Image 1 (cartoon, helix red, strand yellow):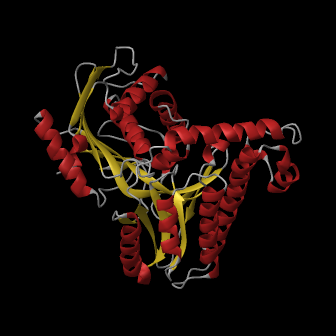
Image 2 (spheres, helix red, strand yellow):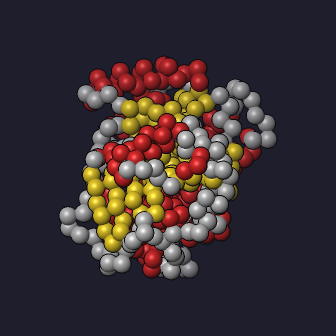
Image 3 (cartoon, helix red, strand yellow):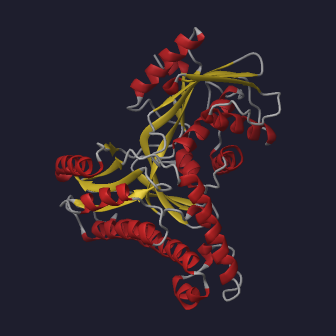
Length: 426
């Protein structure tokens, strides 16, 4: 039986992608793969840039995936082929895993996963592997986290005696593996990211958001019950070239703010520890730029807590009409974007235009940028009756002003990482 991250599951609507990668594996390596490790991208409904400040986030796993078709080798070689870019790379598990200068960027994640898994004492094995996916790269939907998570499952599955008889990652190890994948970003990709993306890719649940405390890693699956609304993502088609460097600058400003404010608010170790009321008492002690960065994060943590509370309360009584609680959730999304634009300054004209267009359409209850910023995507909650108008207006007005036709994805909220076995792939 096919296994998902809970040890259950069946092949979902990405089965066409699964069949395609199986065929590509056979073309590349001459025979079928043993299994396919699959991990989803994510979209964050609210709680941006709070994760690396030990705060709260509320992402969902989406039905776009990075898939790795693989087969265990008898030696310690790793032979990889990235189908979407028609590129290959090889390395040996017994060699010291530094990043060769000529290694393609996508291979850094697999080299990093293999290195850290071995350093943690886990058993992994050589593999032949083909990688493909439909998580847009550079769009802020966590293609890199999905790649790290799917690579982790591929290596663990190949090295496990449980292949074909169970899922190789016990439930209580998933948070540990999320932290390992986060280290891959830090140490092998040079991005000081938080823990959210890797965690939702492993722990996502269909039709639920993941309310995650990024300090304790305690989490709760909260039913969405969107009552006739859809999560709709708009891709600016603008590459996030500033995101990595500016991301690290924002993190440094937040840490600077904590260091300064600790003189007046003892015992704090991150912005998560600062109540909005206390911040307002001492914000003038901060340099103007640091003040803006800290204000956004502290306000955003408050918004996440309120948004989750709103959803949990409305789950007691669901209607097919747009209710006041869901409208309130949308207002919080809008306020989140405004803070990202004005105080955290990680938006851009293309993201702002998409949110402005969306908010002008009846039936759109919330719109905000999602991801690191400086391009990438917006996330919108759109009533089913407004979907056609939404897509038409967004495409027309964005292309008129920017000269690019945006990509629009209506997403289903799916489960987290899965492993599909060869016996189930035919």
